[in-house]
Length: 432
Ligand SMILES: C=C(O[C@@H]1C=C(C(=O)O)C=C[C@H]1O)C(=O)O
Ligand SMILES: [Mg+2]
Image (cartoon, rainbow, N blue to C red; front, side):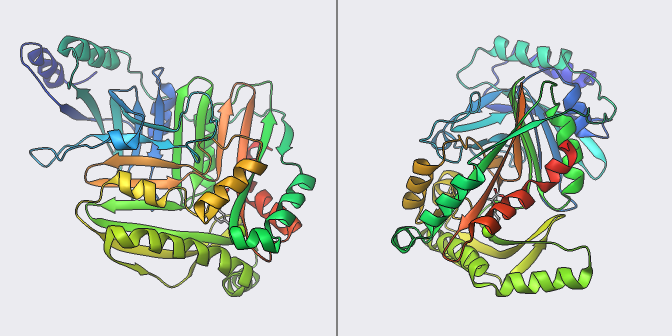
């Protein structure tokens, strides 16, 4: 139950002419936002947690305002400088391609209710959005959302189920694509193209996406954790190591994350694998093409941009090369400019962008949808988006996994196929 001060505020608004965005918040006793989210019956439901051990968790339900094109989204700074709307959602990899049912090319939601969990404390926010709407209908919707709230559930284990796996492309088709992409003529057009595979795990038993996400994130500590469910049978979850960008005012953080090797349980061998990765020409090229593209695209948007030395990101089953990028943006730059510039990055598309997209559209027969898209949180002050990889789509009869690999000169089909396997290893270890 919301405190009486909140219900009084809502009643008072019925005799006023509220406008714009109104946010009311109060502390709640919720320890595990994902279990709170799983208990709610309202859709959409979504979950977002940025990378890093101090990151805040966000769980949202319902929709107070929907944005389906980033150029429509221009949230003003609030007059008191404290509260501005926060939208959660994402973009498809390729806005021109056929996407997944229920997702769309762009979908950012201002949740009706947003639970924020930080350092052991939870606050629930009720969002109202009055512009161009019937005041009483908006207040009715807000009250109905409060009345539909349910208490958090207890953590539940994943029900074991059997799956039958179907890969698209097959290993044989994959080898043909790699051969084609690494031909000299194709190399001249597209020095890097990121090709992907869909692994459909069909099952007769329903899989709860939130239970799966809860277990998955425990294997993927230093990653972005996300889940979006727009309809009962349209959920997308994942644990991605890659930041598309984080913007705090005019300060921008991005990164080139590309180049992959496996890990080894033995620390000395693991360190040797990391050193080999950093020195390997094929993996360096994958990474170099990403940071060169990001820096070139940021140049017109920023005063200066800097590139850090290469480092290694260690995940549970694999390691990547990462180079951090930092820029100071011109004051006129908005998220829509950044999205147009940085998405899709050569880490998941390739370079040059148009030629790589053409290659992907010509060869891949599965729908990428939001896989390799961008997802996260947008607001006037702070926006943060992850590159939507290491992810799964959960539908009525299947869990579908996606993985891609950057194909450059020197790519070998079998090794790139193994890289795809390593990229789905965490979630596969849960689904068995
Ligand atoms: C495309 C994916 O990952 C990307 C490709 C990488 C590579 O080829 O080395 C590494 C990290 C990501 O930028 C994926 O995980 O699906
Ligand atoms: Mg690679």
